[in-house]
Image 1 (cartoon, helix red, strand yellow):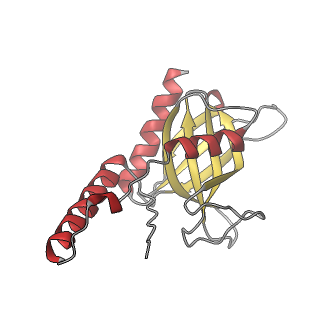
Image 2 (image 1 turned 90 degrees about the vertical axis):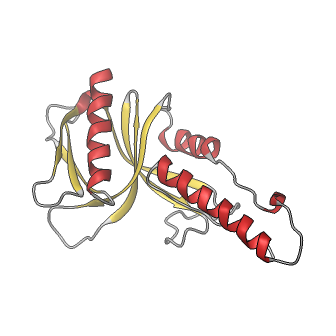
Length: 188
């Protein structure tokens, strides 16, 4: 029977290591098996185009030109007992986006009303966005090395700054997100 494995990883390096390990395991299993099989049974798809199409649909009419950084994070709030919510943080050459992300078969609760038809298909829902020029500050949290805060100036002077409080998978992930955001801010 067929098996589809969907992996959501935090870096390309980790993804490449996992794929290499999977390929090595398949070769090893084929060597142990008395049944001859070929590597054509192992299909590895790169879904970058589908993900970019889904992102473009979610952020329309803003559009996406160049994706400079993509990272899965958890959003949390300073007050209240809301817990954390998994989000995708996408930095382009002009904007920063915070999105709900859902993949068919990833085990997460589906937050979208319509059914997705293809296993592994990505769908995004825009939570918040800002021009890179609206970012006032990107700072690591003092108490948790995995947490960062992105301070965003509103478009209207009548509103107050608002904060994205994001929790990354580890301290390195937080550093990558801070560095990528700051780098993108210097380009604009």
